[in-house]
Amino acid sequence: MKDRVVYLFVLASLIAVPFVRSNTGAYEVHAASARAMPTPTPANLKFAYKGISLGMLTDDVRKQLGDPKDRSEAQDLYVFSDEESAQFLYDASHKVTAIMLTFSGKLTGAPTPKDVFGEDVPARADGGISKMVRYEKAGYWVSYNKIVGDDSMISIAMQRIQ
Image 1 (cartoon, rainbow, N blue to C red):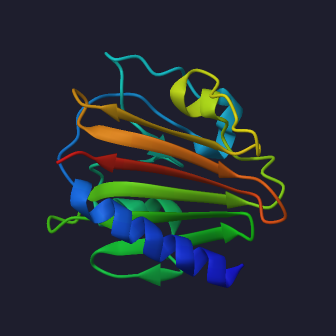
Image 2 (image 1 turned 180 degrees about the horizontal axis):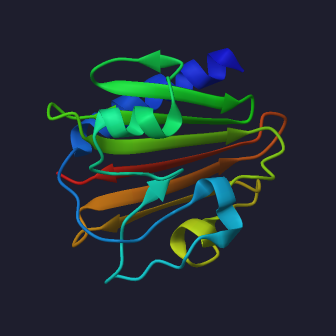
């Protein structure tokens, strides 16, 4: 499990860095209570996880979630359980520019594509799911990836667009 979290942490960092930019909007994704997420609309976009949204200050993230497992000026890694972790990336002004979520194992508490995008996303033949939506006017993108099998996993990324 630790190797997979480290791998995803590094992978998400490499993917995320080129896309950092300012955010706007007001839609919330509450992954902690995935089934209660509102449907996104173009006029009401702002993504958040456990009360943390893009643009929040590093200190506010740490006040909300406590001490991260790994911390630096550029990013924090929180491991909430063997099945749920989150990574927050920060810019030079100490604001959240990206949120990467990882759910593994039974996936019972993980958000569905409908929770994230407001619509179902068809699975591939192998049962996996991949979708990315760029909310250009709101200034960020969201991706959802589900891998099924012995090590089932869902990763969700939210990041500012440059």
